[in-house]
Length: 225
Image (cartoon, rainbow, N blue to C red):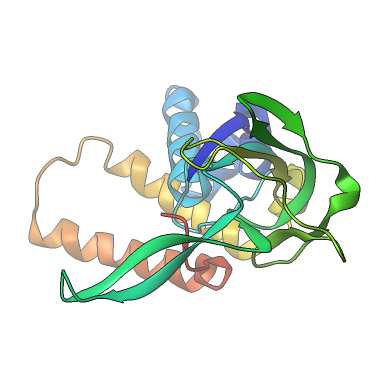
């Protein structure tokens, strides 16, 4: 399985969720000498929390478009492997393909390789289900998936858009915004933290506790790591 970010949120959109001015106010900073440092801290905090390359929340906040590639219409299954003496995963055929990084907003197209040629699947052949957890692309009633080149790692491609919406929508989720303040503030204060020191570890634990408390309820299990 592969996941490619096609259109990530812009810097302006991220700063619309938490601006430099708002972060400075939260940290009681009045000068503007380090505004660029504050900006970088916000962008880094957003990337850690909900970056399009799978952030800590395992979900999408600001509207982002992706391309999901699969070796077929398959899903990952866990099974007991006697050879390795423990659980393992394998891909098995499925009638329902789960879409990562929810919430799913829309599926713009499904293509598959047929004789080496990318072919668009008729939207009448599948049903899109949206959810605050994982959205899906499933077979329509009395339909079947077309044959694909099973040996190709990108035999199936699903283009989709995910996220809660624009900056105003995400900003209204106060737990996420507060977690961004904590993470960005920590990134600003400890911008060159490269060693382990007991007092810093204690501070970091407080940051982790705060982020978990405020944004943890938005976090979901990552089934596509």
